[in-house]
Image (cartoon, rainbow, N blue to C red):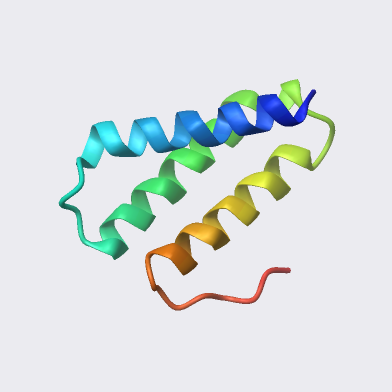
Length: 77
């Protein structure tokens, strides 16, 4: 596993959400799609990363998306 492979996960997440929604989706709808796709990625690719690494990356990624979309931001655990 490399930092690049995590960056590729983020890029794929962005690409999928953009393909699904375009640019016109409201922030809450956009975030829900990020969350849904992140869960699918975690379910399908967890074996390619050391325990917990992909989950932590995706949690941080979703946290940043909430900030970018100006949504209420829960405290990371």
